[in-house]
Length: 226
Image (cartoon, rainbow, N blue to C red; front, side, top):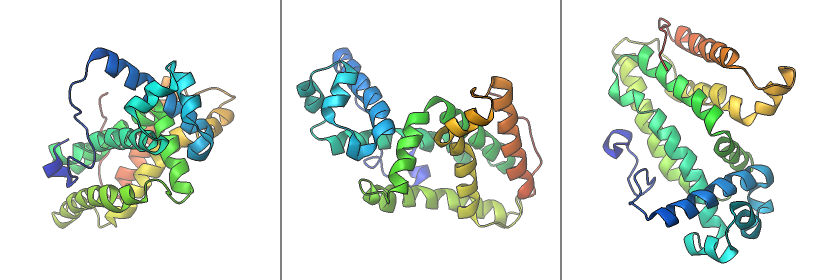
């Protein structure tokens, strides 16, 4: 993401890592994938690097070669989902039509909840516990990035493109409605006869969220392609 647009420093969220050798990349991907599963199931306190290494199929020493501490590994997993969320919000920058920008943002956030549910769950667990491991990240990176989105929404309001609304609360509503499908997927599945939403049901949920939010700020509803 263009950090000049988002207001987030490149050092804060490394969205474009340096090119790595294939063995190194393979090991890191295996470790991060295993870490997501273990952290999502057991939380930071319950997870151990020994357990994560076993899930990744690598020696514990190999894990600590790439990530010296459990804290470093945990924060890397957190930053990974945040970087994905940042990319979704690029619609604010590349489109001056709020209806299109918000509809595409909501679709991207819903797809992320479906495809990266573990990362979202880890983030939610951390926040509900008072963010003991990432409070500095919230105070600096998240706050700066959110302020950059708020400025764009305020401009839309000033230009008469959307009804007056508190930009922060609009963002919170989008986050809660979309991330619910990751963080509370088991509840949704239970109410759906124990089955995940079908593609048709997922699309209906997406359109419902989009329609409610856009109409709530005086915008027409536009169909958004995948």
